[in-house]
Length: 409
Image (cartoon, rainbow, N blue to C red; front, side, top):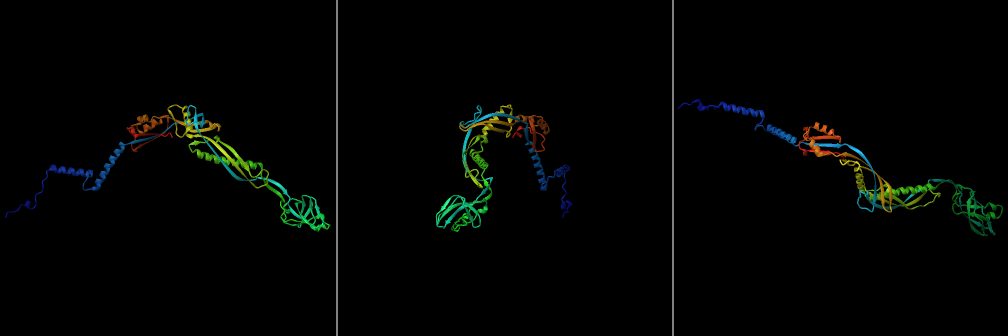
């Protein structure tokens, strides 16, 4: 049996060329430097995230936008003009300064209770009716002011002459000798002191069957002339406000009704009590009619703007919501339904800025250069520049990526 050599048992080692070994070592070294390895997924994920961030930053830089907010310099202008309102026209006439008018009419009645504020000092004598009995066989004549004394000693006098037939009765009206509440007595029996000492004294007497009333000494409420005038004035104010609200509701928010363009006509005024009556309260009624002439608020604003624009150059505009209008009724005629106004106007104006030209001037400039340029313009009061993304420090070269807002409102 032939003998085995050592390489028959252990295969000989693979002999590598020096050039191949060196190339392999370089590849392994590059993998270690960039950290990429199919055998390490976490490193791979981090690697791809970094690449995405890098691409996103490049995209944002290429899509940069500039937002420039400009507050223009303003100045106030004033104007005064006359306008008329006519219900017979339907369209604005700037040449004649005439606006279409609207006519409204409402009427309403109101009743309210009031208190008397006057005070009167008064003395009153109690009075009432007495039935006089004549049980004597002869008739009895009693003259006016005949004395009658009640069971508790209160003195009353008759107001007229009276004859009581024999064996009969008669009613006589009596009044207390003095004022005061002490004479407001209950039903009583009355003697006649003038018959004292004669047989008629017990045969002729009187009886009351109801209370004596009206005796007083003190102050009483009283209606004054001022009370009646104040009541009518208060009702007029209440009704005027109510009718004005109804007129404004009917006109709507678009139509302006000036206070001086509303007329008031009292159709009826009455009170349940008269002046000097001694009562605590009274009731009054007022019937009022109101008419009004109005016009569209938008029409007045259009006239005002036209009037102001005559005072300024074509290169200037009126700042939004700065227009102030104060109109006063010069005259009004409800028969012809025409209204004439004196109007004062005020507004803020600013110089028009050519936004497209400004974009061309600013594009590609740095933030510092842009601020210096904009701050140097007299027609600009304040400016704010914002760029997205924030790390970009220049205005984009593409004017479509520049947005300029004029804050004139």
